Length: 97
Image: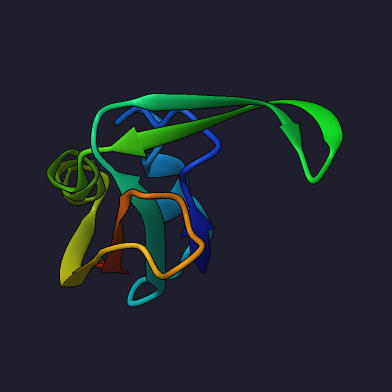
């Protein structure tokens, strides 16, 4: 189950819901902007929007996944590609126990 976390506020109490919808051994791939900031956009592609991007600490997300019954299988960090926002990305692959 792919999970993009940069448009929502993630609380450790939200992560057990992932375990309820995945069978044992099921995988979740969490993609997030790494950090501790919120970026707000009022326009995007010349259209008015009200959109927040939440950067999260990968270690906090990993701890929340572990508390929710997942084992972290892999973590990948990368910098931005040309043309992307100037944030570091994190990808956490976890397996439901």
